[in-house]
Image 1 (cartoon, rainbow, N blue to C red):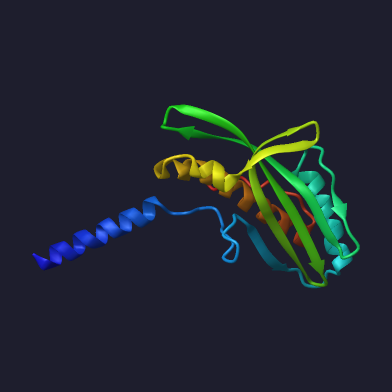
Image 2 (cartoon, rainbow, N blue to C red):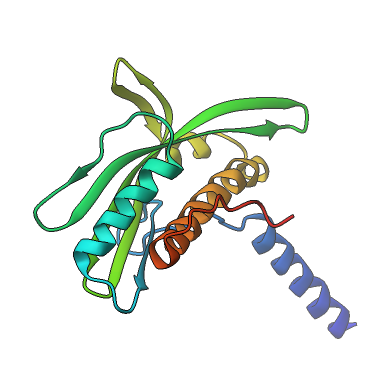
Length: 178
């Protein structure tokens, strides 16, 4: 009987933790949504890497948004991604994800940062948006995964596409794994 209680408790614990799983990366210091990683690219100078990153942004992001490269070889751009998610298994909600892209380079490596994730739109070249964390928080926990999944998928695909292009100089639009 005691074993059954332990097993039942363990199943409940696992079920709760799996159902409230967080897909989107969270910065451990600030608690904000953020994707960042340092990628090694042997034999490439920081100038080559920033040029490849700039080329990739033109290929990957079709919308017009200014790209800037400063004197420290840091590229910045506003990323936009249209997606929809299903609320209560009946209603599709179309949204636009807006986020900051920052790519820093040094010889043989670069660091990408996708941060300041927001839901909104661009109106007259101005961002009209709410923080993604606040947007997601408005919905019951069981529906939040439906919002997080397409966002995590897109940002992961963008990071993989960037890495592939910087290393091979071959552009590939990464498809979903299914």
